[in-house]
Image (cartoon, rainbow, N blue to C red; front, side, top):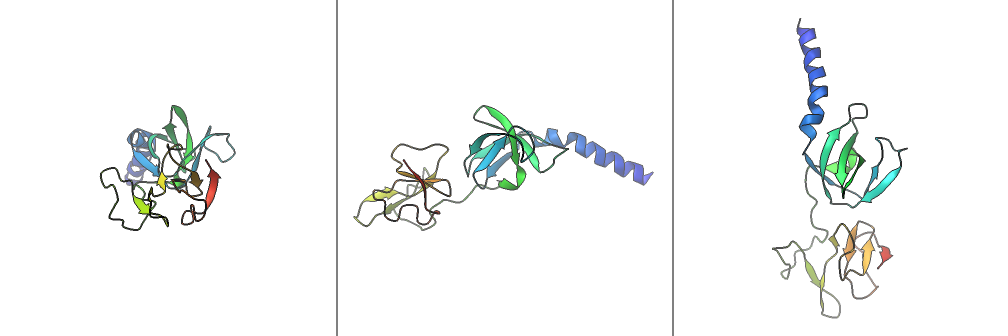
Length: 158
């Protein structure tokens, strides 16, 4: 009788887990591919930038390492190992007295004495950005030397 009760609870959990997952928020810990199906072999719809908050649409009982999400009006699957419950820390770790605390944007003073926005995560290239770094941040550097040096180097110049 106890075994039957346990089996019933396990089956009930797996049938209702997708309902509990709906509306759950997760944050991408890397640039991650949104795929058409729950498989590495599925076509890529788009790439979701690192530090993007996603809402889980449903879990997949057949492939539990994949979750269905909505991103920019597109629905697809993301591998759950690239998702976290916790928001990522700022891309610029040094404390700067001139940081704009209210918006979370930080600044540094460059070698010429000019105040410049520190590399910051955005879902698309923001106004004023000069380069995209390999870690998914956008740089606002005024010179090419040292740009993205603490962020994996320059992925592309804007």
